Image (cartoon, rainbow, N blue to C red; front, top):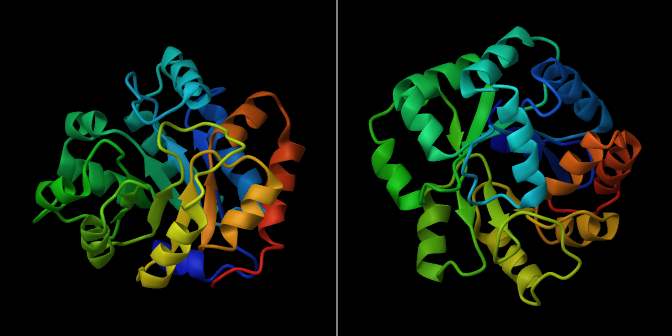
Length: 258
């Protein structure tokens, strides 16, 4: 099943995609954590690859990446562990990585290996969408979607270009900055999300800053779902799995666009 289909075919509510950092706490915890998040009701899971210069990450996710790097976790390690976990979960996996690890791995080999690992999509925040079209032209991506990001400052012309080529889902960035938790979103955000969702051929998920149940319900009612990172990473690191389960459960109560 394609990533966009998996998001649309959720049974109820709005989509909820938790972000976790691969290798935070040790790679032995990766597959069990994915299994628990799937059991909690995650629609898909965004899996971060630790990187030394994470320009889009706020302090919580950056710290998680540093903990994983201190344990020597690499992209190869993560993909190998996903292959080992084949058959233990069915929730779609979306890798979040930066461009440098992809280049070091080799672009064609990267897509071949991610597909073999069961990965459904990739997010590369430091790769402009237009450049991705050129970089991946002629590359067999083996069905792995390259998820585009749209920001609040993206021009309408650029948004039109992205929506025309979008696959997997559109990641609608909700803050003018890095990842992290916030209590105040820009006034224009909800109308921006509704406009994107009405025009997009694939689901639109809102991410950056989300950490409360009321935010999940409000943002989730304006688009197809939410991505939650810093709150999930922090809660899992502190052993607060019930807080994670409560936040994921709140998405099921949203009367949202399918």
